[in-house]
Amino acid sequence: HPEGPESVLADCDEFRLRRLELAVGESLSFGAGQEPRILSVAEGALEEGDGTLVRRGDNLILPYAGASSWKAVDKSVVLVTDRFNRIK
Image (cartoon, rainbow, N blue to C red; front, side, top):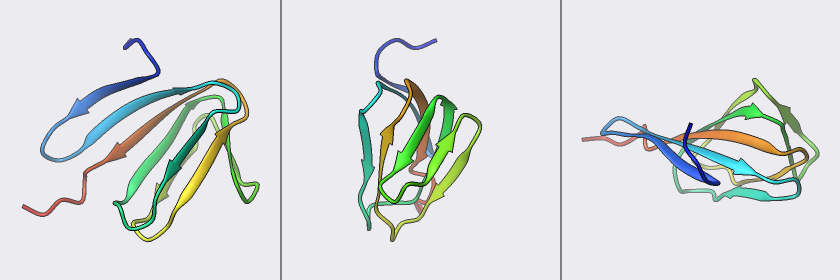
């Protein structure tokens, strides 16, 4: 498996898939108006600012128009899929 806190698992014309390791209390944020993303929790759990908790096995679609900020409540591994909405 890839080493380090962030690894690119796939990067092709259709999408990019990144693996991120987060320590307890570490944050992950996405700005509004950037691009849609898919957030998949592979290990641990994350909590959004509004108290929403996502755990291992949960998958979220993060829309283009929405900003979100997540904090790891456990040591966590998340997969972020992006760059899938590009028009060629």
